[in-house]
Length: 362
Ligand SMILES: Cc1cc2nc3c(=O)[nH]c(=O)nc-3n(C[C@H](O)[C@H](O)[C@H](O)COP(=O)(O)OP(=O)(O)OC[C@H]3O[C@@H](n4cnc5c(N)ncnc54)[C@H](O)[C@@H]3O)c2cc1C
View 1 (spheres, rainbow, N blue to C red):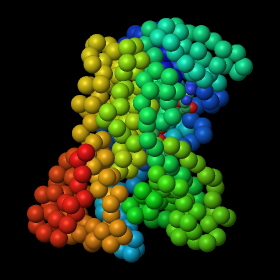
View 2: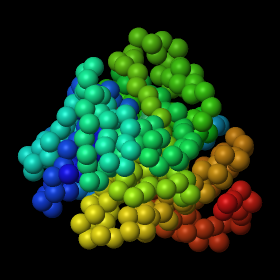
View 3: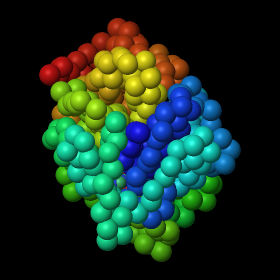
C-alpha cells in the first residue's frame, strides 16, 4: 500500500496516477474538507495544458494581457498566450474526485505525525491510528511533516498574502516586481481581483492594497488568504529509502513567480514513473524541472539586488520591440529559454549589459 500525506492538488494527482497503475493508494489529509482554506492565486501559464487537460469545472477565467509595472509607475504591456485562472477549491476537489473514482481511498481529518520506516502514526479526531505503508509520499505542502520527520531538509520560505477584492478591471494581469519580492493583481472576473504579494520579510499587503485599490480598500475586501511558499534548493533531498517528497513539500516552486502547481503536477508524473518503472526519482524529476527552477532562482537572486532605478531601467528596456517579442513568445514556465532569448535580444541594446553584473550562479 502507498500512503500519500496531503490531499492538495499534487497529492490527489499522484494518487490518481498511481491507482490507475493498479497500486493500492490511501491519502491522508489533515483538514476536514478538500481545497479549503485557499492559499493560492490560481494563475497558471499556457504550459498547464501541456501537463493536464484543463476542465471547465474549475477554470474561471482566461487572460491574454499583462502589464508589468516599474516603481515609477511606467509599465510594459504584453500579450500573453492565454493564462488560466483556476478556482483552487474546485481544482483540488476535481483531482480528488478523479482519484477516488479510479479507486484511491481518502481519509480526511487525518493528520500525519511521524514514520519510523515501518509504521506511520496518523491522528484522527482524538485517536491515533497506525498504518504500515510500503511507500510513504509527502505531498503535505511547504511545511511538510513528512520532510521534518523523515528527510529533514531545512527549507526557506517566502510569505504570500493576498486579498480578494471588488475591483473593476480590464482582464489584464498586473505584476509589480519592485513591491515586496513581487506583487500582483489577477482578475477573477471583470469586477473581482486577487491582489497579493510575496516577500521574505514582513508582507505589507495593506500598503499595496491602499495604493492599488484606494484608501477605502477595506470596504472592498471579500476575504484574505495567505501561506508559505518554499524557495527551491537543489541541495535538498526528496527521496530516502521508501519515502518521497513531491510538490511544495519537495520545494518544486519557481522563485520568480511562486508558481508551483504546474511544477508539482510534473513532479507527480515523475514520481509515478519512478515507482512503476523502478527509476531514480531524484534524477527523473530534476531532469524535467531543475533547469527552469534553477534559472528562476538565478533571476530571483538578480532581482534581489535591484534598486528602484534598476527596475525603472528594466521596464524601459522591456518596451523595446525585440524584448517585447521575447517576453510575449516565451512562456514564463520555461525560464531558461526565456533568459537565453532575453540575453540574445540584449545584443541589440548595449544598455542591457548593466544587468549582467547582477548575475550570481552560486
Ligand atoms: C499566496 C499564494 C499564492 C500562490 N499563487 C500561485 C499561483 O497563482 N500559481 C501557482 O502555480 N502556484 C501558486 N502558489 C503555490 C501553490 O499554491 C502551491 O505550489 C501548490 O498549492 C502546491 O500544491 P501541493 O499539493 O504540493 O501542496 P498544498 O496545496 O499545500 O497541499 C498540501 C496538503 O497537505 C495537507 N497537509 C499538510 N500537513 C499535513 C499532515 N501533517 N497530515 C495530513 N495532511 C497534511 C494540507 O492540509 C494540504 O491540503 C501560491 C501560493 C501562495 C501561498
